[in-house]
Length: 286
Image 1 (cartoon, rainbow, N blue to C red):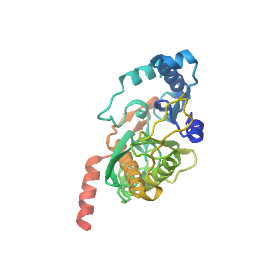
Image 2: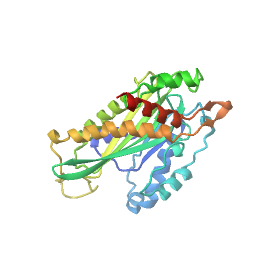
Image 3: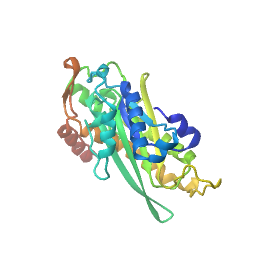
Image 4: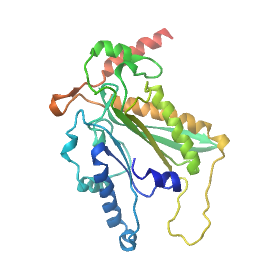
């Protein structure tokens, strides 16, 4: 993930967070710089250095990744059209070529509302899921992947276990950069709940940010006022991160549609009817 050194050193994110495939990190990086320098006149005039945050996953099983099909203008158009509200999931944007546990996946998102000190906060997770083996897939603690692997046979939809997952956490909790780091670590527990063992060649990268505190760059006052929740009160936030990450991955799978990509490589979609029947039967056994 480009720009991660600034995030870890300064505890600040100055740019939109870009997600793409492995070979287009540089293009997205440059596109974000162009967009920000044109949008914010002060950056353009002062030659302020912009360090974009861009995460990537390998989509080369389905995508012609050597084709350089993403341009800087694609980035600018995406940022110009970005809006709040409903978040598209599945094969959208950088999620188009992603595979998770042998099934078509892509972008997924989920959120939780938590209460700390009688104040309600929101914590959301957005994932680009591209990891895992079918037989290891777990949903809500059930080893559904074993039965799905029997149903789908030994169809090869990934080279070994190549792939990764990018998780972006967002919250309005007033927290420090150290506390954001601690929240991000809990996201790995949500990924593990889905059956991932973080195989060799699979990168699990998590970045998070809070809108609860902002820092005005170039401010003359050397003192910065921050509101921070006490560490001992963050338990609900940790739980929310784990649950939202897990559910976001499930949503990325449920939103996936079958796809045929480069060289005729194909990936099936998760059978949602099968999944529904499975959980109906599981409920009866409880």
